Length: 74
Image (tube, rainbow, N blue to C red; front, side):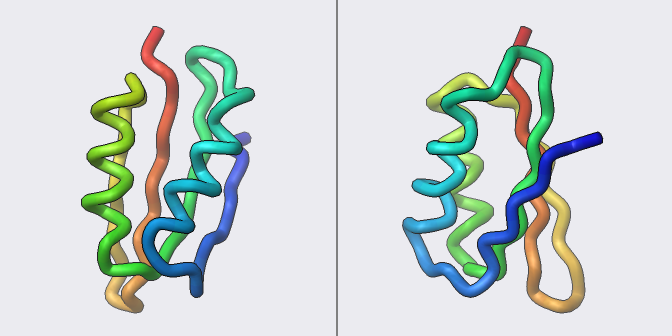
């Protein structure tokens, strides 16, 4: 089961800052999901993942929510 954190309603940069706290204790190979409705979130999460060594999957919905699944590279 993937741990999930809902950051809906938070504006940039809070979703990524809160995700960073969660990810500090993430073991390699483990996945965690984040939900956000901030339009800047896809850019913020992509940039963060690239620089911090996480793989990322981004999905969007018609309701304006973004779903990010991150995991540490092995």
